[in-house]
Length: 195
Ligand SMILES: CC(C)(COP(=O)(O)OP(=O)(O)OC[C@H]1O[C@@H](n2cnc3c(N)ncnc32)[C@H](O)[C@@H]1OP(=O)(O)O)[C@@H](O)C(=O)NCCC(=O)NCCS
Image 1 (cartoon, rainbow, N blue to C red):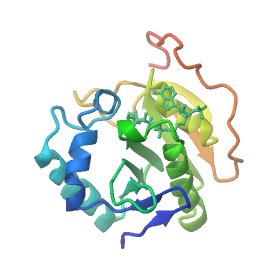
Image 2: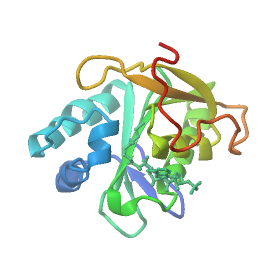
Image 3: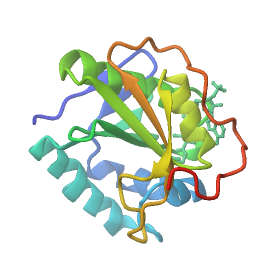
């Protein structure tokens, strides 16, 4: 698939490239990115180059996984990453620490979900986050996803296991208002729910 750009007045989603390596390496040092995603740890320039070649470029070439770097208008600095895997209709994302809390990831999710429904014709988009990832769950909730329960993650974690994940789902027919039923931020993590 030919890479394309998505944009709104607040941000631009552009395919990341070699010039973004320093920003990616910097963002992936963050404790929350390391804890809640499967980026390698420790994370260095070879990891960013591997990511760009083998995940981003390969994902676009095969059409299996589409990844965009998030930038604010007028700035070339990459502040976050978002991707959608088309087989499972599922999202992955992170935002660099300095750009968090401004609603940018919620906006990026909106752009990708709109594309998935309006241009790609997907019936739904799915979200998964490790149990206890309140920030990611807040993005899904704010984006209109319904809480779909807890269970072993679809994708293997860094150790090859399938950690317990919260799940969310947004139907193409859903409105984008926040839905009730999400775990409250700071709720105790269930010991074995859904496993
Ligand atoms: C999750 C993450 C992408 C959120 O990015 P962001 O740009 O700050 O998100 P937004 O600004 O769009 O926030 C949307 C909502 O989430 C809330 N939120 C953001 N981070 C939060 C956190 N750590 N804890 C609780 N709520 C959080 C915001 O306050 C906002 O809610 P509100 O509008 O009710 O106030 C970012 O914290 C991150 O990169 N975390 C580490 C990597 C990660 O967890 N990736 C997802 C893996 S599933």
